Image (cartoon, rainbow, N blue to C red; front, top):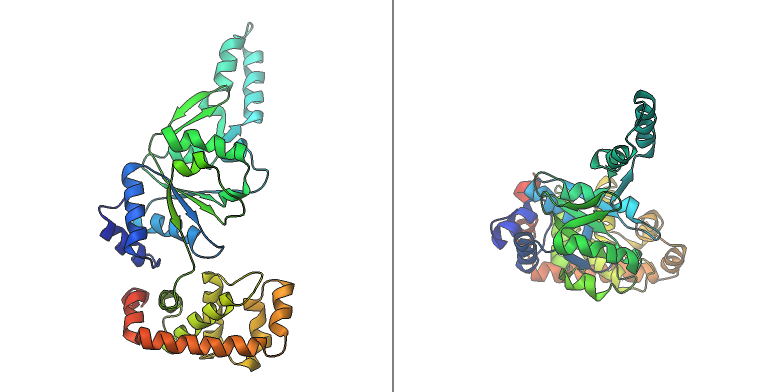
Length: 319
């Protein structure tokens, strides 16, 4: 998909994903040697966005398998179209005096009667795609074991049909919020990256790309606010996308920073549980958070002048 780590980094940045050469190198190598990438880290840190950005940067389809408790092979690989099978059997039994039932059985268990799920669809693409297996930590070990064949030899074994070999090998991303520890057999087959929340400078650049007409001082304040909120004991710390929501809200409300008086209008954007809402409503808590946000913003100013943030954000792309 990419010719070098530098090209990978440039492609990711042009698609709006700000990272470093270490991550870009891992993505380049994974695509070159056909290894999946396991991304672990807190919710909202940008794991899913990395896979989506790779697909955008390389102009290939993104196929997604959203995992959840109780997901089975039919949802992941696919299933036979029973109504079509039954219709074929009925037509053959009526049109032929002595139906060849063995042939009919072979026909209705062929690929023509099978509706592909995301995994089968991904390996049947004419050209390599990006396959995102999202929140793999929500499934059980049996489902993990089912994935091992795909991630090892790029085949899928389907009951009654047999083994389907990949037409093309996708670049696979597996994401985990670390709700449980994934098994070693799965880990062994993957490259491994930890995706943390971005540093303040990078978060300011991310926000700047979403709201390019806002003053850079506001971008720095939002990055400082994100750092302040994540340092506090919230049940649900804010994600990058939620801080982008805050940036757009501030632009719409013509605010250059959040003050204690803005607590009521900002709580729906930053407090996503009843417990967090009550904490932020406590006397002086919100005031303390916005005060720390301003201090963090000053540090960003000292460490990274406005021009540095604009360059990192690729302001010419956002125009």
